[in-house]
Length: 172
Image 1 (cartoon, rainbow, N blue to C red):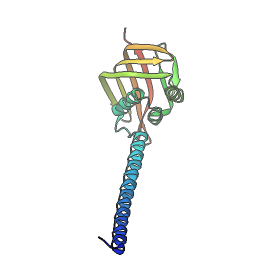
Image 2 (image 1 turned 45 degrees about the vertical axis):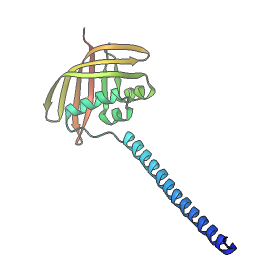
Image 3 (image 1 turned 180 degrees about the vertical axis):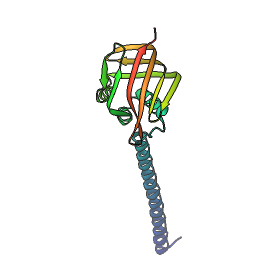
Image 4 (image 1 turned 135 degrees about the vertical axis):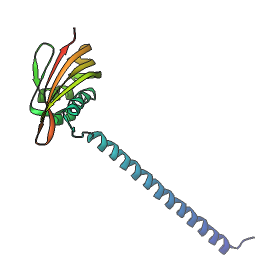
């Protein structure tokens, strides 16, 4: 039979091992929590900072249509000039601020879209891009699914490519 002193020492050893295990678990849990917080921050930051400056007029036009598809009002705002205009089906025009707000508010929702037949003409700091856009979208609760002919004009201003105008016409 063990003496009271031996039992007391064993109890201290067991308690100390338990404290060591708890400390290790706390460190591990803290590490896991910090890792998850960091991972979440990186994911959030990458979702917010996914805009890269286009390298030419064609990429600028393509990024514009991609931003429409992704409902990314911030990217649209970064891509268009201050005097941007888009002309729609009946010839009505809206400016960049109105387009950005309409996307942000969900008045314009592009469900799917595929560009094809792209033709690019570049004249120094001006690029004209035309082609077809097979699109499914909702504009103020009116559904549209069909092929549009598009024409976008991009300019290089201040070292950055921006979209200055877009024309969309239904293909009959």
